[in-house]
Amino acid sequence: MTAKVIVGGIGVAFVILVYLLALPALSLFYIEGVAFWGMAVVLPLLFVTFVEITDEGEFGTLSIIFGVTSIIFLLTLLIGGCAGSPMFRSSALHKQLGTVQERSFTEDIVPIDLNQLPIVDERLARVLGEKKLGEIPALGSQAEVGDFTYQSYNGKLVLVAPIVHNGFFAYNNNKSGTPGYIIVSASNPSDVQLIDNIDGKSVKIQYQPEAFFGRNLKRHLRNNGYFRGLTETSFEISNEGFPYYVIKEYEPTIGWSGKEVTRILVVNATTGEIKPYGLDELPDFVVRVQPESFVFKQLENWGKHVNGWPNWSNVGRTKPTEGIAKIFANGRFYFYTTITSYVNDSSAIGFVMVDTQTKETFFYSMSGATEARAAGAAEDVLQQYEYRASKIPLPINLDGIPTFLIPLKGNSGLIMQYAFVNIQNFNIVGFGDSLASARLDYMRKYTDAGNRISFSDKAYSYTAEDVVKRVSQINRDGTTYFYLLLKDNDSQLFTCSIDISPELVVTEPGDRVKIEYISTNNQMVDIISFDNLEISLAKTEAQIQKEQKVDSVFRDNLNSTTVIGVNSEEIENTWDNLTDQEKAKILKNIQPKQ
Image (tube, rainbow, N blue to C red; front, top):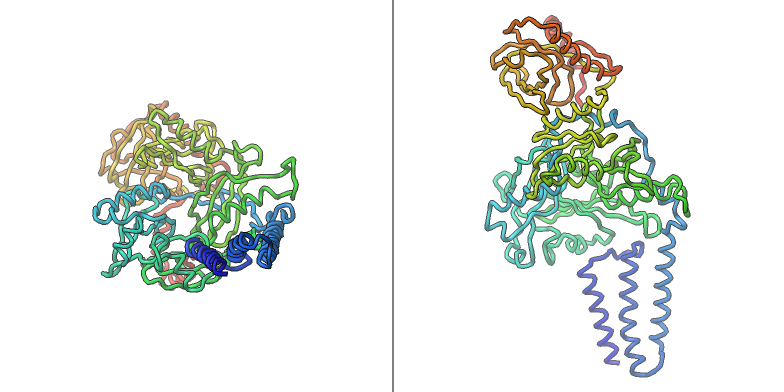
């Protein structure tokens, strides 16, 4: 009897140790809960039964209990597994993603300013964050940079990551917590900040996944009674800069499969305070509710089980490519991935965007390059330098053209070149040392291939007189391109080739010029016509024909777009002639953007 108690105690101790290390969900609705409780009952019984058989040489009561319990446990696993198996639930698995809406890329994804393009991914952010941390030698030996999360902070797209313990001994020496977090601008690799205090008070990240004992984040949640399934921890900061961890609670909805987030738990990283939120009452700073792994699995099931089970001939099946990008469009965050046919994944049939908060899913039908082929095309252009393309290219709307933006990195992990690759024709690749020069190269190659640029249903043509503030030029493939910064409009950079006007060669800062351009959302604006008012040159017939040819390229690129001329002076004069009552009425009817 004593031997049975000792051996049974060892089995119980082992089960407790497993719980303390794995911290599984304890509910029987989760497979991990069933596995844990099955082990908690079966394992001690197994140990005791072994002693019983060894001592008595025959099967006793405990042996029978062990056998029955084991059979029940195995049947439970079998039934639960079948309940979520595609063999029986393929329709439910296909529908779990919800309604997938077909949309137009150029209508949904508005053109984005070059200076706001998120060129920094998680890998580059880590390189920059570790470099920043290394500037403080004493800190770098005790801590490291945690996982980065995209979020909007003070109107800017950024990546944030906590500074975390780099091992048990580091934790033991810094039980008060690690000092703060890293913010990296998603559009400017030079903008990296280490935030270790707010309003003069130090920020200590005490509760984190890398901590031990009661300060370990998951153990802290379990100790406070949160025993449901937990998945994907993301570090996010409030609008005031206070650090939080966001953990997703989930439940299986199709047997033990079909996992869905039910609520989120927001943990104050400095105090450990836990606040649960329903999906309809999220804090403003929380942008990532749907776990990436859940979304990817549901995209797989959506494409794989479209025609039920079995589907030996793969009729209608699709699949997502490996890897998911995080993009910010129209004020929302999305997961993005390309969709290919189930058998041939060398080319895309379209791509999907999934809202990271609501799981609302949009499909954009568009044949073309997958992320891997686009990245390969970008690397091939500069293969002599052995640059490596960003793991997951970013899809953008570049003046109405569906395009991949691909930063090319050197061995250090820093960006060396930028490439724009056409999604529908990955042979069109523009590259440059800057986004502006890469865009210029890309647009030239795009139009040289016989394509037209579609701005929108309506475009606005502006004519302006201004003074040149700065002017510079570059030569690419035998063509000289000019960049002008104007005195009264220094928020945009105007660009054109020498073909627009020979007067560009002798244009200097201080010259008054007259330009015509088509308005876009980019800070880089293409000039249609140029006239230096300080210079009077007689144009040859050849030059007139050249300018007409250049002008026709811009006009033809507008396709069926209606070009509306805008006279800024007339608008200003009209406004000045209005009465105060009329101005107030107009201003009252202008609704701010939500």
